[in-house]
Length: 325
Ligand code: 5GP
Ligand code: MN
Image (tube, rainbow, N blue to C red; front, side):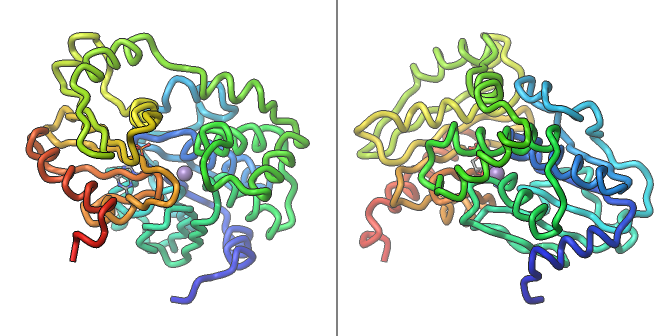
């Protein structure tokens, strides 16, 4: 189906009463910020909104207004419309997303991942947006509705976290103008940055010790892994830590960084980062995941060592495209 306009999507939402919203598993600031931000906007329009995420909200996001309303399973329907946020494919929505239980309600996907598989009835995918939260602001404008303070706080948290404090290569004048508007609506940039970016549980800091001891470098690719045993050693709970992979890419010798994390179910979560001008989204997509040119990820079969042996050459090939043919 042809891409709808944002006004058409606003029209579908305006005509709906019971709205069920999902975001991605292992939620980050943009996932939770977009979910809560759109949740506020819809409730302010008189909608009956249910927000679902399969996994717990990370502790640094628990200050966001409305966070206590997020359920980990949807209640019984029926629903007029379903919304999927910041997720590029159906598995990314986790086990609570059961199409068979949605009574045929149309699905709207709103996302900024270039790898989005356009799995909804209405898909608004804008890879030029720095965060899904930025698209929610565009949606409010297309609808002609105001952005209130609680919505602005949640949406600015999405923008701040996905851009790591407005430092990523997709930060444009429009991104900064959006941030300014959210500040004008009452969101405190310094407080949101402090609470989200300057936060790491002690156990997660301790985990960097054993993880950095396993550091490997081959050409311009730098990587390490996090085993379940390392986690047990420092009593770190299961979860991803995108800070570690970004930290590895600070090495001037490196152009691509990867962290391989062993999950409790034996699968391996792969976090990828690349310098501007490179593109690791295609590698992630080919491995069943997705993401952005400079930040992508996927989940692959274990064991850990085999995943590394399989994936590192794919990353080296990104840097030597002529060697691939
Ligand atoms: P991170 O390394 O911070 O977990 O993820 C980086 C980017 O890759 C994010 O935009 C995230 O949405 C995407 N990503 C990470 N893992 C997966 C995955 O398993 N599937 C998909 N579709 N995207 C992923
Ligand atoms: Mn995002």
